[in-house]
View 1 (cartoon, rainbow, N blue to C red):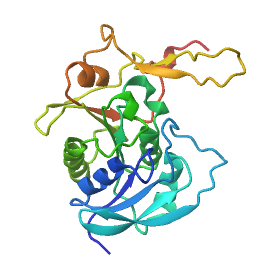
View 2 (view 1 turned 180 degrees about the vertical axis):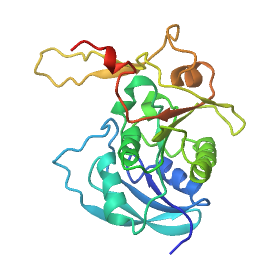
View 3 (view 1 turned 90 degrees about the horizontal axis):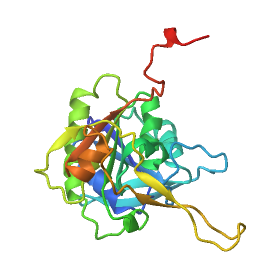
View 4 (view 1 turned 90 degrees about the vertical axis):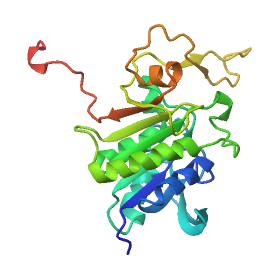
Amino acid sequence: MSNKPLILITNDDGISSKGLRCAAEACDPVGEVLICAPTVQQSGTGRSMPPTSEGRIFPQDLLINGHTITGYAIEGTPAQVVQHGLFEIAERPVGLVVSGINYGENLGEGVTVSGTVGATLESGSFGVPSIAISLETDPEHYLGMGEHIDFSTAAYFLRMFAQRVLEQGLPPKTRVLKIEIPRHATPQTEWRWTRLSQVRYFLPVKPHRRRPDDPGPLGYETLKNFDEVEHDSDVWAVRVDHVVSVTPLSLDFTAPIDLNVLPK
């Protein structure tokens, strides 16, 4: 049994994602990696636990840094995959969960929609330090999983923060670090502590259809006007200043008010 900490690597893009392999390669030098990922694309599933998921597990060989390891493709959402990884597949306690590297940024209040973040909210709820990492891309690559996407800078920052979390732990009251890498970042790019923007980043787009019963899922576009965006937020850091955003997340969704002053 390895003396290295066990690092569970997952994502929402599926077992075939280049970003998943790059995350595993980044973490391989600092721990023993255990790869558990959805069998298919699961973007936008948040922390959902649909009862229709069958949870079947399919081992497969993956080449990571020149050596072959056994990864596990699991039928289910990222949050369900994390549960299988933590409680069924891992043979010893997991020291860190990493979700990503995601195709496309996960910014602002919409992170609860993200399967990338949802996976780490699930692991964080069990007290396992967790990192969700995403790379800004053009929207056409969000679901495309193109092999041409360069994850090297994201991998650099992931390794740095994985090592940091394993050695120092998370900041106080934090369950997850959400890391966002701008598209043109390099290892020399500045990184910054940020908070979640409360300005909506992904905006719904009405479908075009002739009749109400025609197929017509809502589309979306990303925010273009940043005048109202908070300067200490993840959106401002990535989209305006083009620096790496690191946001400490908590599972406490309670409004920050004094409950004793609320009327009964």
